[in-house]
Length: 294
Ligand SMILES: [Fe+2]
Image (cartoon, rainbow, N blue to C red; front, side, top):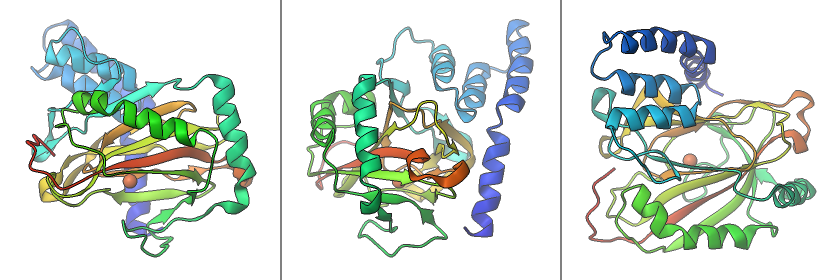
């Protein structure tokens, strides 16, 4: 890993620290209670909560900020939230406890049985070379258990996802799916899954389903989704949503937003103890639809 990445991850760790953010929250809550908080008090709360990985609490703070009663139940972070330095907060779908426990465990056993089939992942969308400075991820596209379930789940929920993420009703050109595992030292440095404009052909929705031992026997491996200005290729690197890779958690977000996977630590470095995910992308064709973002 490059020194710059190491430094970036150390900063993310510090900014996302649960204790520091809890202390900042307590101060802010006092100000809100006494009516001395800035107008953006609820959004400031949401920022502290989402950067410490408290997604459900962040969702409630955003609801208070927007003064709305309801949000789609799958939506953790709604679209349209502006952030620092002319960036936008990435909208985010989170579904916890997606599968019955025994089905998640069957997938986990299946993934472990495929250990020798996993290889080191490349970088670019055209399957560029493996580069240990940018990414350490094991992956395989060849798996069977739950494969069709996820392809069907994504296809049958497309309209729901598009509506929640405020995307026009594009059609699916391709639905990619694979298994990944981050073992000790695994990470994926800051990147985007789509560098083109929204009307161009390319990835539109990035999704992940975390599974494995519960409680996990790894630490780290969080997904950081940065507040971004995709049109200008910029990220507000100190403003982000941290997603803790809890087993049986599904997440999805627009592929244009910058994101990274934090370093994973696996004591003993057993393959079976790594940070597993089913991960995929929905590819759209070129279109002339009205995209309100990225
Ligand atoms: Fe990615």
